[in-house]
Amino acid sequence: MTKIAIVTGSTRPGRNNVGVAEWVLAQAQQRTDAEFEIVDIADYNLPLLDEAYPAAYQNYQNAHTLAWAAKIAEFDGYVFITPEYNHSVAPALANALSYLNAEFSNKAAGIVSYGSAFGVRAVEHLRGILSELQIAHVQKTGMFSLFTDFENFSVFKPTELQAQTLAPVLDQLVPWTKALEAVRAEASVAA
Image (cartoon, rainbow, N blue to C red):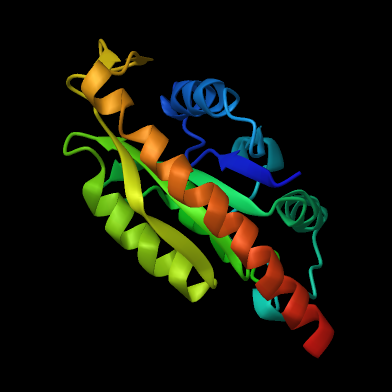
């Protein structure tokens, strides 16, 4: 069965990210075409990138990197949940992505964002990072507003209109994830 990780994008105390990830998981689990699991980057205690070698070498020296790499390698695709910080992707997510390379390569991803402007600027920055990691990101995006989709800016309660933005993301992501399995198989034969 195709496995897709729902990756949190924030490690801040009191973060909204987990509530969004849990909601995405609940929606995704209604599908039968893939298995979904939350991967919380906070669980890996990743300091500011502290590996001596570039990620492409996979010469990981630290236990936290090895654990992070092993977990990410388990999945065929990803849904990244990103808040928008300073018109960009959350620093914790950018840092977590910078740790790895091959574990993400030739896989697919969808993005779910939130912020004062639906997180759209974070999405555009995240797309550049994902492209560099050879992650094929789908066109549709789940987008949520801090003003209308969160109660008191802290409890995730999406409006019906914005809740409908998730299904098209998953509808694109699952087939792309399955299609890229053949790309990875071909790449492993060539290696």
